[in-house]
Length: 174
Ligand SMILES: CC(C)(COP(=O)(O)OP(=O)(O)OC[C@H]1O[C@@H](n2cnc3c(N)ncnc32)[C@H](O)[C@@H]1OP(=O)(O)O)[C@@H](O)C(=O)NCCC(=O)NCCS
Image (cartoon, rainbow, N blue to C red; front, side, top):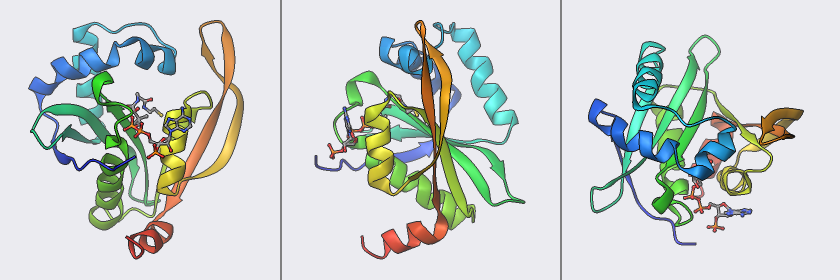
């Protein structure tokens, strides 16, 4: 699939309304194995992330329409590591945006924040996400057995990571 170019900008308070919509779509809820969130809960969630020092960025397509967010969280400079998360609007999924969003955020993490490692966890059932992460060069470092409960069943969770040295190697081939 052709990669679609996006722009990353800072995530603003007025973007929370859209984030609330994307987070409450049935696929997001099912993937996260949780219940729908109220708008106020979503505001609190964003506020907590800001207080934690997470880097929150909004994603816009080339028509400048907000189509998702991406963030670095658990930023630990002593270890040079952070975890990454992404959520696209339901109508923007499966169109090739995810790759460019992740590439830009990973580059910020390694080249601007001087991280050494970026990692994430994802449900073994999230084939789209795992497919994207593998394509970007993330390696499965661990498989947590029956770690997540979703709609009556326990599922494995994958821990995946990429090192700055591996990303630089990839960048030199871009
Ligand atoms: C996960 C997410 C970020 C992926 O971004 P996206 O732009 O939708 O990704 P794409 O559909 O372009 O797919 C990316 C790659 O995944 C792979 N992929 C897609 N669907 C797949 C499937 N069903 N099985 C295996 N691999 C799949 C493909 O390799 C694809 O690349 P290609 O088609 O160019 O070869 C996005 O769908 C999303 O926000 N989903 C909801 C929230 C979420 O699950 N976040 C991640 C939590 S860990």
